[in-house]
Amino acid sequence: MPQTSPVVLLTGASRGLGAAAAREAARRGAHLVLNARRAGLLENVAAACRAEGVIVHTVPGDIGEEATAQRMVAVAAEAFGRIDALIHNAGVLPPIAPLARANLQAWEANWRVNFFAAVALLRHGLPLLRVSRGRVVLVSSGAAIHAYPTWGAYCSAKAALNHLAAVLAAEEPDITALAFRPGIVDTDMQADIRTQGAGVMPPDLHAKFLAYRREGRLQPPAVVARPLITLALHAPHTWSGRFVAYYDEEVQQLVAKTTPEA
Image (cartoon, rainbow, N blue to C red; front, top):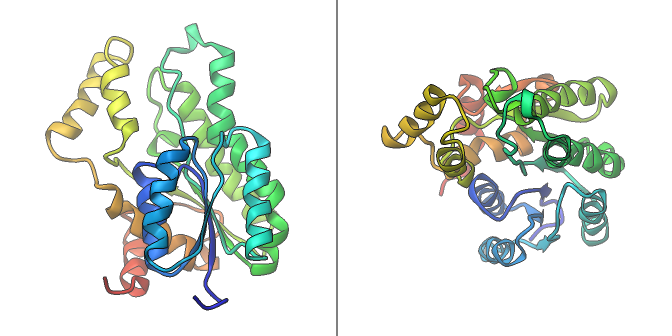
């Protein structure tokens, strides 16, 4: 593998979109530093990526803890001496509850993973990202701009993530920073919404998410992983600070232009 191969840090890499993104990045020749809480599942993804001929390091642990973010950056620095792309994909939905019954500890746990993990990764990773003039992609959600009752912690954390990308773009002119809207992906989070949301979410909202699966409207993770990795490796600097969706026409055009043949 040439030394010019990009180095990508990716959180939430053991399942769903994160696992698909890791495999897509490996298929494109990127070396990887992968994180997730479940070490066994994470190692399975790493093994699949190594089969593509790339170097993969795993950092199992809770990305909501700053020490885990710091370890990811340290591993990249020691193994590769560079970071070309940082993707914060890890995310959690709970607590599902109205604001009138907010549990502050549960909210803080949500924000540690969804938002403060990104801050920690940037705090420790920016020196290397500046050198490489790298890219940062923060995986957000439509919930960042649409208010879903009982999703207060998740909605507000994702909205903050969008603005974090904009602040990063303003502060770091040599880095390309984006928030990414993945759409409705067939992941464990969707399954949790269907099960844990029953009797808690407003009935019409819960029915909406049940219909997504029943009507086949959930996107396979691999479909969304292609634009996610395309942005991490090829997003134009002129897009920095924006909130872009996987289905945006300009994003899909970039995918078509830069994705290697299978």
